Image (cartoon, rainbow, N blue to C red):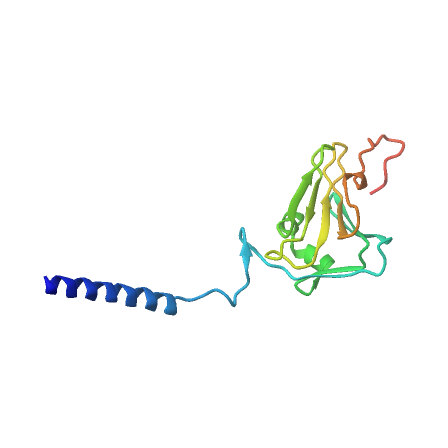
Length: 163
């Protein structure tokens, strides 16, 4: 009987030792970048002089990029305009959390308020109206950004803008 108790105690000590060694020596990913849904956390930096500012920044395929209340935006030290030369809009969207989808054809409002994805609270509106507006608006967190910024006016031959 005593041999059985000693054998059980020996096995328990060996199991506890194995678990302890596993915990101590398993590599930890604390120093690497954090990821949420396969998105590496981005460092967003913004400059904002006036919340009243409204700036056209860039033409991208069928979209225009506008800044609202922002003077400059960078991602991981790269200016947003430079970032968009090597990344598309879908890649940019991954850094934000969808807040609302509007009934204007599918425009979507996103925020960057999840500190696991980024640490600057900014907003992004990705227009997708029934009239074909695909513009993108990046805004300061204090701007009331909504689908009213998207152009939902049907264009006819008389008032169509030159591209």
